[in-house]
Image 1 (cartoon, rainbow, N blue to C red):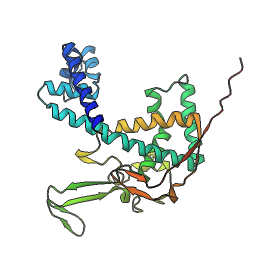
Image 2: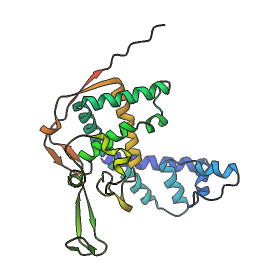
Image 3: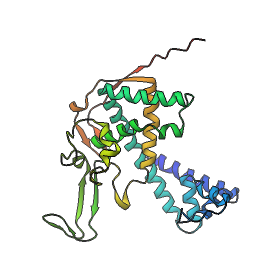
Image 4: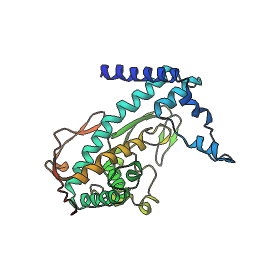
Length: 282
């Protein structure tokens, strides 16, 4: 852990040196950002500049040069993104792999979706392809409902909160049970069932906005949720394209361990069987 923290800080330092040597020319785009993305667009050049994006670290460095962040602030943001992002995503991948292995019909549907998208995209996994896999997206969301990596979060009430039958006084320490909310039959019919179609648009529309919280919610929600979803898609899509998944250990038989991240207390094993791809005749 100490080595990883040192390595991250070295990366930050090296990136800052790079921008010093290039006179900050690759950070100048930050100056063109404004708070109103719907501002007037009278010519093509401002639109082109406004739509460019900086990498996260470059954005933080640009903000520090404007006096908006300190070096310590940058380190905290990078540490948060790296250390809170890798284990949570890894466990999410374990659970979605196990669920697909246990539900062959759903796995086959994901594979068909991925294969169809690849055929239309010259067999290349691109960002656009990954963003256009709606069924896989629903499968991942459903896996995160059943097995949210962050199973609980804590908050301190900033003011008195009146609920139906009692009052939560300001200053109260609250532990919010996300795992329990995701299995609440008031929001989810047959809550133990793995059903990706719960996340069809017409079913999401009338659902309570705080009945699904795999990335928390509100101003302190996960800053990396879109990146995490894309990471999991980028791993699962080629996985099901190249392998059939079969269960060895079944989730219902495993005891869960409540660590910082939800994880099985015993090994969770999945069998990977290569998909035999026949070559087209010349």
